[in-house]
Length: 455
Figure 1 (cartoon, rainbow, N blue to C red):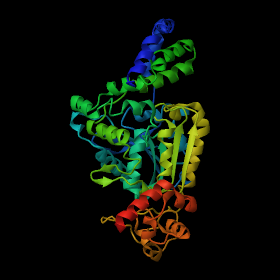
Figure 2: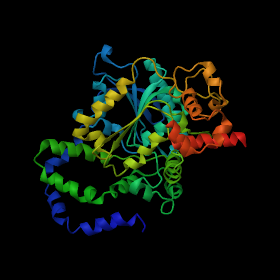
Figure 3: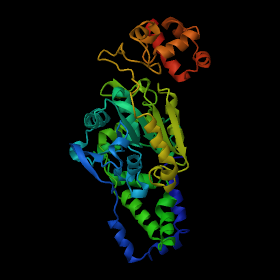
Figure 4: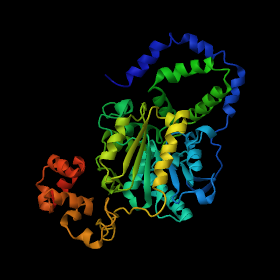
């Protein structure tokens, strides 16, 4: 069955049943026209960097300087919709929660691409825009590496950035980020399947992907709620001022979608959704491979249990394929947008997120392996979890010549009787995984590399 059809069928069958609710909506008092004037994004900030349509916002601190953490936090939002969902109102502002926790907070507002921006690629967004913003934050803070928190598509791009520029990322946070699409991405992955959908045809027709095209697509993922139920709820609560104001803020955000640069959209759909290249470490940006083995910094995933846009199964497996030994998942009983605006998440989830970053944002950073222009690992860099490695440790075994194998992993392999690249090439992944407690997927990549070297 073509997955495009069933939400439309469901919508059609519900119109008659919903007639009473929709008629009730027509009785909403005229005073609700003022909903269009509701305020959003009220936390004070200043623009500290601009490039093309992009603005980098720096938020005014809310705690004394002596109570702030050393490492600043940069929010990387998606290319779709406006970023003020992270600062919807004072009691439901992710930005404010992190400011209250003592962080120096920045956020990227991408702006809306024009017809001149159709050719902007993922490489442009990751290696140019994000990198320039990170450098601006590093310079302003005096920190060599900063914290990054990426939301939705912004989280996916943050993973690309962290793998390509690990030396600049202290801690990596991911919020409802789509990372693994191998039958795990729910209805959005079904719609994006190459059997039903051609991103190239869309971009060839429109150039940039129209906001209305994306908006209708997302709405049809839950047509009953988006076209009927929520307006019935509004009518039922029309005398509740707080409810009406919250409803108005959400509607304002939902009704202000933005276009997406055509080339970046096509690359994202084809390479990440349809071919799952990011998860497999096969994605390339401008000829450089996005290798998840280079993600050795701490990683936190914040996931909505009922997220229908990015189901948990499209995020969780990521922690098993990165090289970091400090990974965590915080899953909360809410949806994709609820992670940002639910009262419950602000009471229970975001304090835990702030604590996670706080524990890793003071004092000396753990170094990450950095490759030089020749692609070899720097001899004086501490690798993986063994931060006490010496230069002799790093260069003293041919196992460590394989990308991602540091002294600690080499020690585990040697304890299992694997003392050379030749031994590794002949090893059975499942057996070695059981003996070393090293992820089997990572071992398979190392064994493949060892076989290439010994062939």
